[in-house]
Image 1 (tube, rainbow, N blue to C red):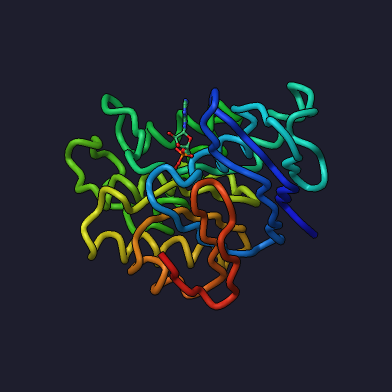
Image 2 (image 1 turned 120 degrees about the horizontal axis):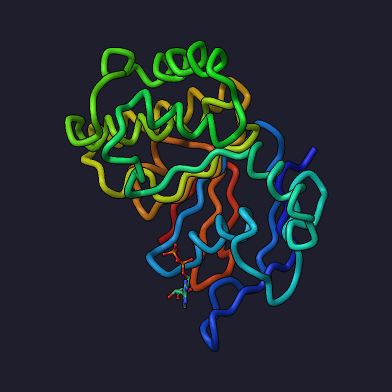
Length: 227
Ligand code: ADP
């Protein structure tokens, strides 16, 4: 089953081409790395998946349903089954690690009992249970990104979107975050990871889709890096 499918997806911002005739599918439980220089269209892919941007042409589907034609309720359900992490972590600075994750769960409609039982489990996965009462400013960049991962996967989404998640991290922390993403993938979540960093691609080793100026230049099962 295809969890995500792009079919000749084309997106312009004014006259600028962000994506041109982009086609690929992501299967349930797959791990795909998207590589490209800055401006190649990686973030646009994720925005289209989240239904945050309109398409100029082609389609982007979740579980076979065209995302641009989803009702508000369908879009909400689609986002509920999706986790997202970003280069700049996006944690709430005045909330503790626990509160950051609890807040996201409340927004998804979980009750207090569920939150109390699931937050420690998610923090265990990223090896940060001991930081549950810390504030983001008290954590390293790598730890903050791990909290963001815990928050993104606490509701057990089928799909995790990771837009340049190691772009702000040193090699040691980047390595650790990639390992955690691989582990989450082994537990059954499909992962779409974007990066411009060759060492990340080498480490993941799986399927790599290379974007150049908004077009798919290569889709390689064995993770070849051509930039
Ligand atoms: P990447 O994530 O690979 O750096 P993006 O998807 O952010 O690339 O951008 C792809 C292209 O679209 C770039 O040329 C960028 O300048 C352009 N672009 C992205 N977002 C906007 C926007 N909101 N308005 C105008 N142009 C944009």
